[in-house]
Image 1 (cartoon, rainbow, N blue to C red):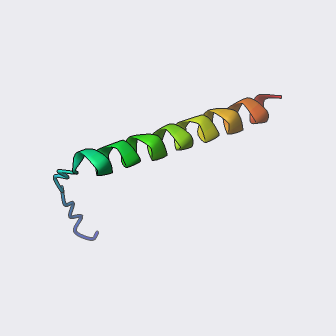
Image 2 (image 1 turned 135 degrees about the horizontal axis):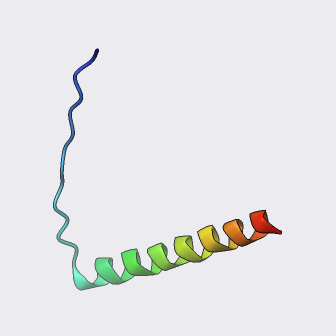
Length: 41
């Protein structure tokens, strides 16, 4: 059995970076939900 290690990183984005990340997250959320909906039909 191998050793598992995990690392945690604290991000402190600027306001501009935070807005860009939020927009990217929203795009991915919509794409994921559309894929789930397509899979159901």
